[in-house]
Length: 177
Image (tube, rainbow, N blue to C red):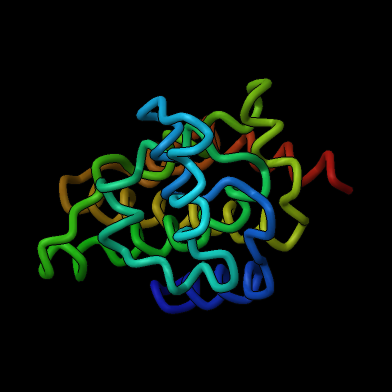
């Protein structure tokens, strides 16, 4: 799977997702800063609600990245595709001085925890599959890097079999069936 293939899959899987009345990036950041309800209102109004592709990469990377701890299920569904795409495009973004603080795996790994189950509950099968393919794409990149250093195919195969985050998402997909 190529970089463009996975970006297209993510875009298709999440293309019609709207934030609606969910907690967005700016509001989530405000919650992290312990703002009052009155202080959160303007942030909520400024949050992109219609098209997740309009969220600037410089916002979703680093500047407001901590907001993912505070978004609800609608917010997670709306923000996740742009976050995944930002990670896929990290080299291109770094050339523009846009850096991610964390890899999205820190959020995706929480899928089997109580709060994570709540945040990811709105993901449908197609969206879960796109996340799985994103994770597999990253494993492919790691395998390609490992091969440069002589890591055997058998050891590289363990990345697929033992990646806990990938296994959690595969279980989530299986449970949706």
